Length: 163
Image (cartoon, rainbow, N blue to C red):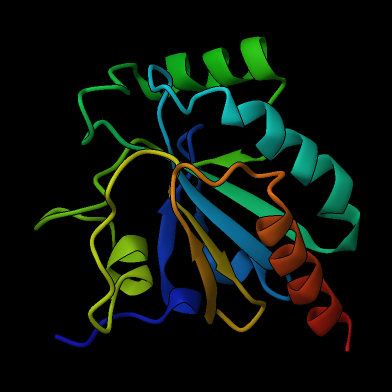
């Protein structure tokens, strides 16, 4: 079975509505697997700041809750959304909780890691995808959303999208 392209992948958002990566078309997207009880959870703050700074320029952030790493995302979709809004003021999109590795990995993560890319190692790994669905960069959990290398990659992706 062929691996779906990023543009054809369906998503169930945290509120139960269906969307797709193509609905974000024409924008750069930072895809991040997230968790509420992780040492990296404070990155929600800097993810939201990055989103607020660059969304008018065409950046979308897609948070993908997963409970695959140490059981650090045990909540329901509603509890996750409430936690993110209440504690971090998150306004970027969140998907329904899903697997990011293994046989039940969401097709989005199958596509992001195709071609021999390593499986997701931990919560808050980040993939920067251009408007055509091409993965431009991957950042480890330890790379903060305000790290110079991540910000530079976002700015380059947005500049290319404007060209």
